[in-house]
Amino acid sequence: MKTKHTLLVILMALCSVAWAKKDDVETMSFKKRLTADSAVFKLEEITKRAEYGRGGAAAMNKFLTDNVVYPESLYGKNVKGGRVVADFIIEKDGSVSNIMITKSIRKEFDDEVVKVISKMPKWKPAEVYYKNETYKVRTQQQVSVEFK
Image (cartoon, rainbow, N blue to C red; front, top):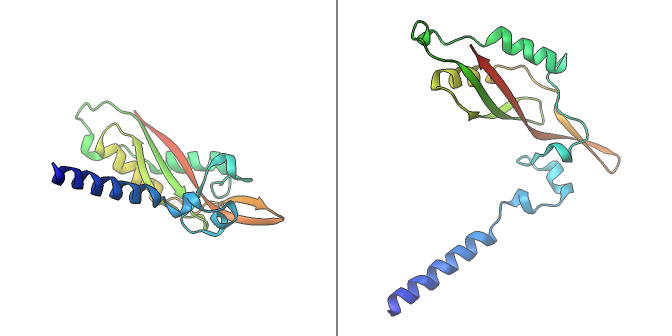
């Protein structure tokens, strides 16, 4: 019984240490988050949204339309298409990173979306105006691609 009690106390202590060590970015002040390399700002926190290169959303849609192709490996296999949704980060320098499929229909379609997003030209990064200064910040973006 003593061994079980000791084990329980050790587990409780380990859990409390794990809970106490929150991600540094979550506990930072807003000012510190502005200069942190790992902070990702939510839409409601930014002053100016990230914008796709020249031409904004219309240019991004054209880029996707021009570059996304139906995977050759699926031709003639009577595979039903659908919508793939991907989230990614627009970095402070406008580059794209951390591409993650959030709605999948099939690996081949997912791979095509990731490939094309990774080739996107640089974006104009999101900005936060804070105490008369402008900061470029990381923000999350989402696209959805329809395969027919």
